[in-house]
Image (cartoon, rainbow, N blue to C red):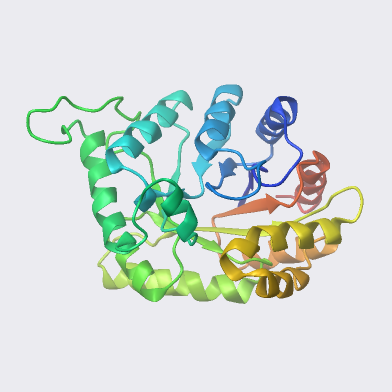
Length: 299
């Protein structure tokens, strides 16, 4: 199982030096991917996914670059096709794209997009991405929208979706599933991947879905458990409300080497292809301590 990282982009003490330090440290290995999530509204120190990943593509040579996830229905598909293809070229073909619906209606409102109809809209938008990447103009009489991706047909696309209907829709166009468990619980992920296997088979797909998973953790220098809980609470507050966010955050326990290793081992046993770890802080020790765990287990 490969192991990658999501860049800290939300409610962290970030500056240019620390952002680029994260990118370069991950690229040193043994990690597989640098990812980043998308969020518009939130604390004042929330960074833009596209710009962060462009910087990551420019200062790295080895790891793959993964938006995780691009809230596609909140954007113009044509504009997204150009952005994604540009990032693919900038990374030298190291791009994997994850798309999803997102769960924050205020983010849609902030960018002038409709929250309603987002499920069907994403199906249509993925088809639009591929048409644009093939060189087809966006409408009759228009010029094509460049650049062309490094791979014909564009980068691999994962679906960051959870419900049975959404997974079934994704089985028509996605290369795999990005499944999320707040606390890295294997049983939660097993259910989602089983759902994907069934949907891919029902769709007549010749290959099973790629399995990518993610969870929150912290191995910060001090008070890792407290930092993890505060991060999760602040992240969840806008969608779940204060009371539920506090209750959910209080249950998270991936804040010691032993607990993180337990989650990694359990997820690998599911046959997961890649695990993306999402840190609660921007401390560089979050990378170094995971490297020690990975090297000790012989991954």
